[in-house]
Length: 156
Image 1: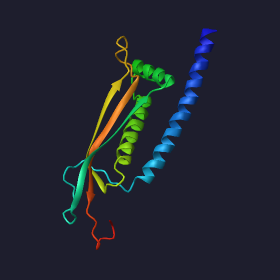
Image 2: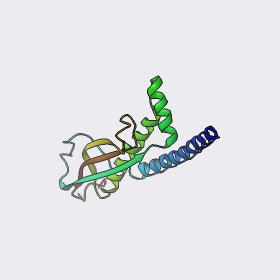
Image 3: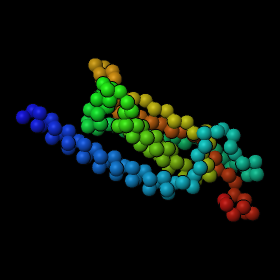
Image 4: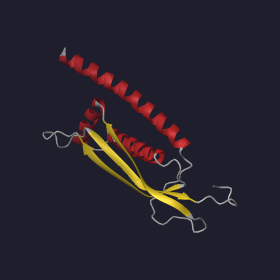
């Protein structure tokens, strides 16, 4: 009976986790499309020499994403047998993309974001399970730049 309950919970976690992840990816793609007008670069000195900077400010976006129970079990099996841990790859991908989107959402009036930096950390690990990942936090930050409006430049 316990084995049956385990597999029922495992199957439930699989389907609900897949649905939640697919829903999150749909939301991410939609927001990426809406915010694609704000370019982001990792370089520091990408400011146009032809335009005058009106101002700049720090922008950040962070997110904490948790892994579901089914993916945690799959990752545990991968640790035993080796290979890519795709369940963690999608977790990190979703976290990174969401953090960048939240950063862009905090810079809606900016013309571009310079010097993008991304940091991650694992949180929620218990002391007795040093190799397990509970959740990850991803923070994206950069410098938002706003150019002065030039009447002759139709781009701005």
